[in-house]
Length: 66
Image (cartoon, rainbow, N blue to C red; front, side, top):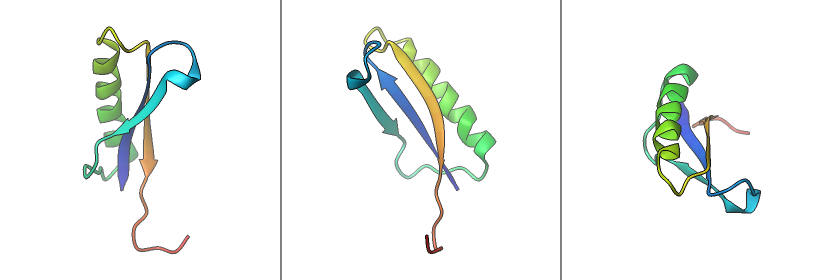
């Protein structure tokens, strides 16, 4: 399973960045996840408070030992 993640930044400095995700929404493939993550990042940069948004996906492995 994959979870969509977006890093949003208020300006060019890293200390203004925050990582946000959609809790409880998972995707079967990385491609599906990245499509949603891209949509959310594109929507975020349209907000005047957001300088930069980086879409990402994190693989979630449930039921296996690390």
